[in-house]
Image 1 (cartoon, rainbow, N blue to C red):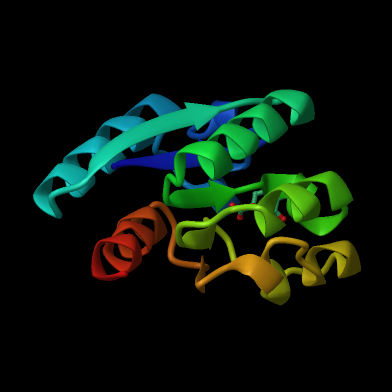
Image 2 (spheres, helix red, strand yellow):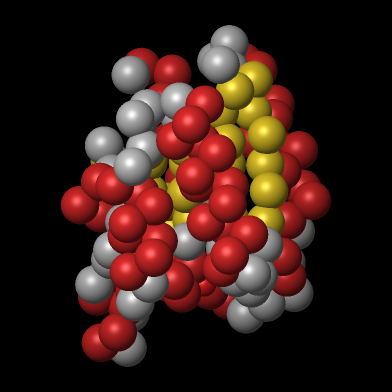
Length: 142
Ligand code: DQA
């Protein structure tokens, strides 16, 4: 079964977006690394990014239908989207929540809540791009 790595808004600008927080790796590089890390774990990985919440919901609904494991960085949606919350609730295969930074250690109060966490088998946060490898390891073990 295919493992989906789904990245939400503003993550398409990785490498250029606030590199002091999110690092220098681009989204294209991240996608390549995830496919390689997955292959090393025996996983077929597909990486996608969208700035459009409806598109993310369609991907999550399809993952529910197809029973795909999901590694999700819902970015800012994490903190307020009840539609993402409801979509995560429908997943049947393991869901791992990833954040490049650690939202709980950041000063903005709004980052301290997550609609994804209630449905996540594990949360990986604050490990940079490496966190995606850790998330794939969780999926591989599940
Ligand atoms: C993020 C953390 C979120 O608070 C933020 O809105 C993002 C990225 C992360 O990967 O650290 O866009 O999910």
